[in-house]
Image (cartoon, rainbow, N blue to C red; front, side, top):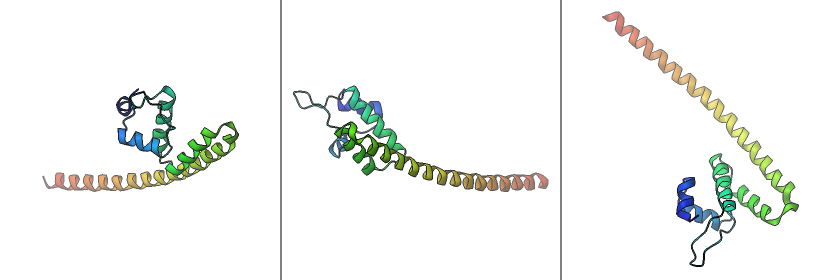
Length: 127
């Protein structure tokens, strides 16, 4: 697949894909003889993985380290798992914070709903 096709498929700009490759988030993509990137299924798997992880707020630095370790081979499995466990812990904490924020927003919205109902009731009584 060309960079334009991958860009469209995953909703990432070509610049973002090039940046991800440059900083090591996506292992080097093979190029055709004319120099155009030719994304394989494996490359697309990395793009999908990185997009998912970034969408969840996983740190770029942690992902760079993870990809670098992956490229070193099976001897790094424990270290890669540790990175994922740490990132999972951080994500769970952020999700808990978001849940608390969501509850607070729900309370505020309910408050405004009550105010609106009161105002509407007051207007109806005047009629």
